[in-house]
Image 1 (cartoon, rainbow, N blue to C red):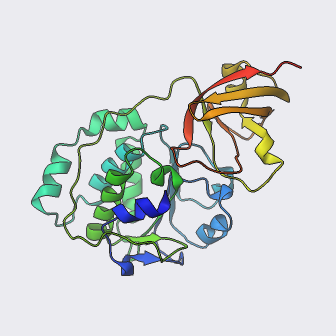
Image 2 (cartoon, rainbow, N blue to C red):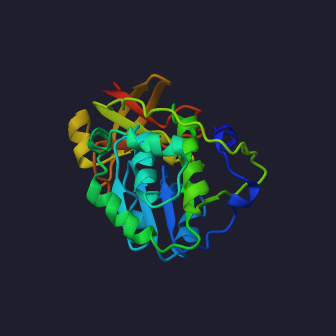
Length: 273
């Protein structure tokens, strides 16, 4: 997962940092509260932009800007974000052509990240001297991880970004030419969707945690025993309604995060006594 993603990054070892001491931090593809110690590291920085599928309440008061995008749309988000942030950079011909051919309107509509949001992020980034990216497992495990890594490599090469990592032993591809692929048509996640992130809490691993909106859409009840059925398997859980959560994606903490994309369409059925 992570090691494979880093092998796709076309950056040098000097572009990786183990400390978060930056004047602009872009956090994308992760719930920081679900990753040990990450909230504390992020909170020490003044300009934090947080982009994710699920809102993380722990980031409230830390960010200067945060927005949610649609599940599965990370490649599109990185493409339109890179185009915006590198609009004044001295790009090579291939990269210019990639951005010129990008269907911004379609991607923005599908991702739910619009022109206004991009401009707000640009304003925060504009004068940054040492911007840093915190990339999460939603990027590592994505079916389009290779192109996502290439897009991040553009931000490093032309936008002066560093990549935060707690492991500098991860090997990156140091080739200088960044070969980009067209952004794929974005798949929609219709129906009940779960986020199966890894958790070390054994009690939490028994739960499916969702908003009132998810509870109504999935036709389940608070404290009800259910089966969660995805393309990865069938899991017995107890559904817990969390008033703090928003949207129609439920959290499904697991002992082991598998190597596929953590967001999955699921069928939720009641467990009979």
